[in-house]
Amino acid sequence: MSIPASQPLPPSADSALAPAAGTVTDRLVEANKQYAAAFTDPGMDARPVLKVAVVACMDARLDLHDALGLSLGDCHTIRNAGGVVTDDIIRSLTISQRALGTRSVVLIHHTGCGLLNLTEEFRHELAAEVGQRPNWAVEAFKDLDEDVRQSIERVRTSPFLLHTDDVRGFVFDVTTGLLREVDPK
Image (cartoon, rainbow, N blue to C red):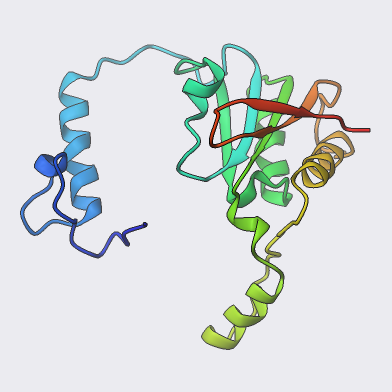
């Protein structure tokens, strides 16, 4: 269950950080104060140590650093709904490669993704509700492997990317934590 940032926090064992009538955002700001009190500048460069960019879904169940054995500073992490390679992902990958030295791209979709249940009808419903048509596509899909293949192809054929030889795609299983590589064919 998601809680909009403007709604009060539900009572929980770990809500000691939140003011009594605080919002989720208040809780995050309070947690940041505690984090900053113990923070020391790691002295890192913005360039990822492993020269890799990971593109993945924004799903809250994916802890990419733990799942991939990564540490702070190892990679660029680029996330969106579905982990789909859109124009904005290409934008981020282009900056990652051309300005910050990444050479490899790892694409990660996952089981149980919310985009598996959506269609482009979502855009039409949204337009009817708000009176304005979104200028973006939902990029929903029915087949995880096929969408990973499409994402691989979008990266490999982008004229803006310098390094397209080490692009691999995976499906993360949210029940086992395992990655399964998708054959690009």
